[in-house]
Image (cartoon, rainbow over all chains, first blue to last red; front, top):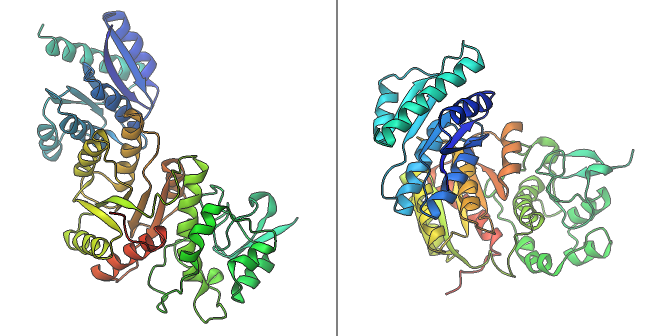
Length: 143
Length: 286
């Protein structure tokens, strides 16, 4: 069974990023999720059967539960389910990472932030996201 | 156009927005969740104000009470406290008791406060019923555990003391923020010890209460939980249109507004009063 990457994105990037990723690495299944609550639900389902995703990509803003809330929830679910290790998180948000945000990232552990260039076209934003996912994936797999 | 009077929002509502039957003093599709809570016609309202019994109202044929509802009726018919400030949950859509909804009953009590209190019960029950998740008789009367998510330690403590002293819940779990709650809730659900009710503040550090509620529902879904735990939002945040829409998708959820200037003890009392009404004033089993 293919390993999974959960992709939380409520906007137009899903298609671009998914196509780009599928073209570069066919060994992973990209699971698109349209809001933060769906990300938490999907993650819980996988955590329950002890098959956590390879990583979770959170492209903000997300409806219902925004990126920081989803990230915090994922860590809380991991603690509750006794996960062996933290799932890598990639946070793709328009905000620049100030000191507070850096402290927040640090508290999450195994989380990286990429600023989303909102002034760029969606396909460019999607490509940027896909490239970042591929780099992180290589790190996760120890390549 | 035929209309019905809604005692919660004080407006005449088109009949097409009114679902038939059940209880008086609930809100309508205009002002509430629209989850099947019912309106009574103006003559039923008048008879209610005149102090007629539930049975008499039932005999009008407009108020059809199921066995389950009849079982709850004594709790609703209990004398209301003379202080209208106590237990005045705000009907969804009416952020506070609007002048139009505050009617005087023959007993001299503010019907606005009373109706709002009943509205909370009805809406909670109704939403549970609509979603088909109600368990057996008396499920809310025997609350095994309640989780309180509130950043004020003082208020949490008061609510916990009151709930346990009055035997409304056997176990009260306190969570200082949403993240702690999500962890505790997931653990409890995995251990088949899901709480019977969650009391949730809205403004909290870290995750907003509404986000927490959505996360909770997602966790229930992810863990394959069949029966959603009801949520009682208890907050100073106004229940605006956006919040109402969120409540609808979060169901089963209910909102009560913290009054301005109320002290922590009063707020704790209000939570307990609403819970007492929800559980029919009976002590928890065991």
